[in-house]
Length: 171
Image (cartoon, rainbow, N blue to C red; front, side, top):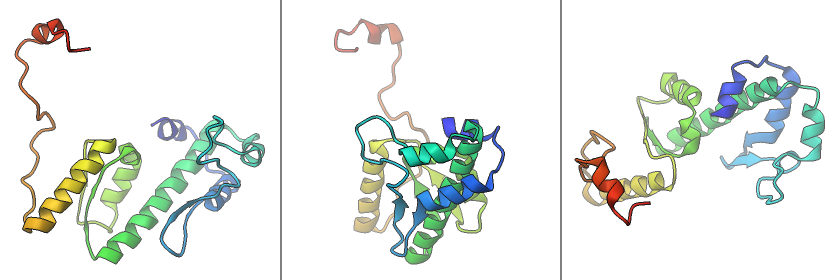
C-alpha cells in the first residue's frame, strides 16, 4: 500500500524504469526473478537494498522510485499472469495474497483482455492459500464449483460484544 500511495506523486524517469527492468523480470522458464545484485531477498540484516541500488537511487525522489517500482511490478505480474493463463488455457482468474491487495494492479488485470473473470479472495495471508487449495481439491474430486461465498463472516453470531469481552479466554 505504501508504494502505491507514494507512486501517485511520482514522475516517470527512464533511468529508474530501466533499472527496475534489470531488477525484476520473468525468465525463459516463466519464473519471477529478483536480481540479488540490487536486492537482498533473504537477508536478515535488515536492509533490503544493496549499496549499488542505493547509489543509483540516491539522486531520485522517493515518489519517483515508488512509481518506477509500481510500474515494473505491474508489468512483471501481468506478463507472468498472461503466460500462466495461456499455459493453462484458462481465462478465469482467482488470486489471493498480499500482492493482490494492490488495487492498481487488480484494476489493470480486470481491465485487460487476459481474463473473462477476475476475483480477489479477501484472505490476504496463508489462509488464502489454504482455502484456495481446499477449493481446488474439491473441484478436482467432484467436478463441481463450490457455492459462491456470500459473506466473509462465517463464524458464530455475536449478540452481545460485552459478553465476549467478559470471557477470560479472549485476549
